[in-house]
Length: 256
Image (tube, rainbow, N blue to C red; front, side, top):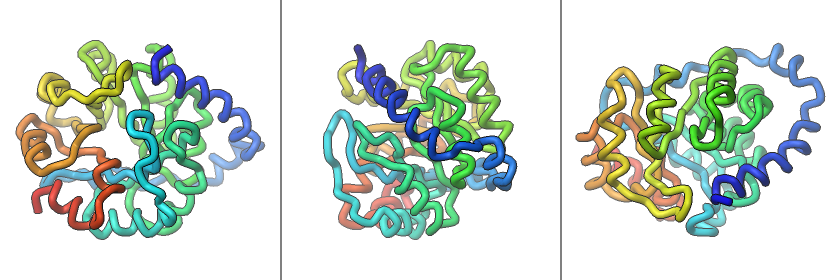
């Protein structure tokens, strides 16, 4: 069983209790206004940063205590992050919906509820709690699920960040014609990162799509190279939560 399989197994168990928190989902959806279109914030210009509130990861374990996720998120916004990602997977990333809600109440920045989507409920959950983006990991879904979840989220006014790790997954993602494609350089089997994944896949993403580089990004040297490859945004968690000054780190990664 791969790391991804193990994570999803836990997500499915936890999902049952999460569903009980919103007994009348359709009513909640009907009473939630459409979110700001996150795509409108990713305008041409300096490299965009999706800054992540991330307590832990399967590859590194605990990363930071993050006693105050709101203060961290505000520093991300002050540093010029275009969007803020908050982990809500609790077993391997120690995230929570409470973190997401707290950050949403404190910032106006578009937000990504970072979860391993295996059910429409998770997409609706992000929507009713003020999300703007949701994650679809191609490796975790068959084509029927991928298309269904993509269309469902977009019908709510959300934008999908469709994440890929290899050529086959990129081909499947491009068939959706999404606004965002994330290229993750982390190998799902051994959790290593390989910059060559960026070099191979990012140039194949059409310029009309926001190409997002994910995982293992820690320096301006790397982000400058990613821009040359065609990346318009980066998603960064570990580097920021470990930084003594997230505001300056975001600016450094952006090259401003």
